[in-house]
Image (cartoon, rainbow, N blue to C red; front, top):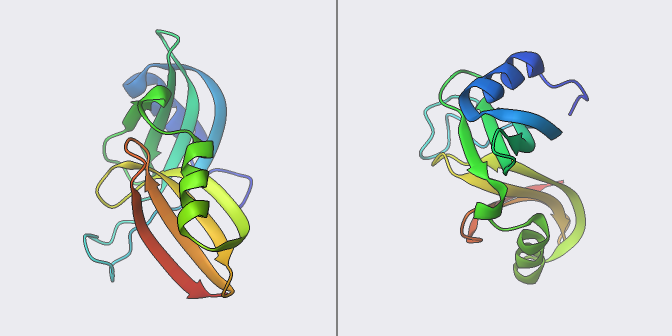
Length: 145
């Protein structure tokens, strides 16, 4: 991933308007989970700029701004599981040899998720999603490295 986030300024303006974000602690780019060939997908890229920060009530929020229009998704940080809890769920269930990345994103059902990218013990590049609000282990895709 490039260090430059596409349309970051426009995404931040939307986050301020639609989710009342007033302070940004971190920004991330989520490439998405949708492709034409996959079930439940209509072909959109499903890419998001993700802001973690505070809203106008000083609550910690996570705001997902879709790259190709559509509605912003905003959740309070304390409405979901922590990165550490999600990581413990993944490592307890999957054979992780090397963790590559952990990021927040949106799944094909428009739900906030934690997405883990790792190499498993068989050498497969693996993507595992954990539903942010429930901690439910969701989709898993493994590809040859």
